Image (cartoon, rainbow, N blue to C red; front, top):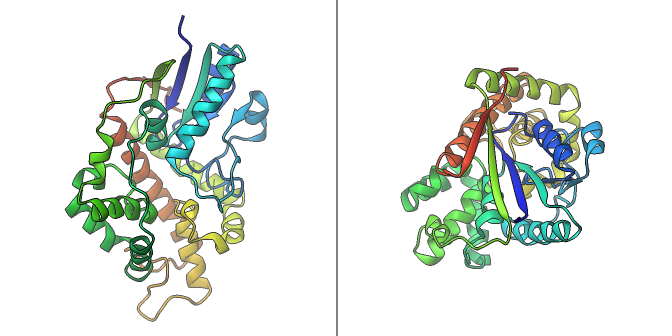
Length: 308
């Protein structure tokens, strides 16, 4: 019987952590995280890292395993996760559980990545300057024109992801999406994908309650402590960006027209309440994009969770 990797995926706040732990205990497996933000040890509250009791229930991998200072990519995850999976199967596991909401990381693990061209330092610096001076809106309009498929499938609020896709378009004259159409790499284990869903009303209520809990648990202090890293790719993340915009307002970095270094179309963030409102909204939008991304994958077996 071929070894099997069971991947638990779904939108943010749907309940992947509890479900994956239950499956891991059933199979005697650890949980291999596939979340592009929970890997960073400096980010805990804003990334909804599993609680201490959840982490103690089963062994977890790729939780707080890297620093925000590290340059980490889906390609690196593919290499490191495949190495780990091979080792765990060799140790005697015949079923392994993976859980996460990062579609690009899951695709990299399951299908492999095409050979994307190396970054061009001069072009990247130019795009970084545009992001800082003009905001992400200008860049994503260029991406929409050059590669509408990628525009509609990635997190277009994430400036670094927009830059990478636009960079490939400009360097090669080919859409970024065209590099993801080659034949999938063959894996020596079976893959089963279980997608978790809830009604939209229930999911949005869970998102809203999660954001409130994060703020109560100290998200503001966590974001303040990470301000020096705000320009790093890891911090281009919902929950942190909105608070950085509020910090700019409080620190007097907003100009007379109400715009500051982190402005991105929503106007000045003048209070914690406004920051929290934007975090809730942007998290709901992110969940919607996650579901849209996975709708193209017909191999996913969707499971509706109880409405709670």
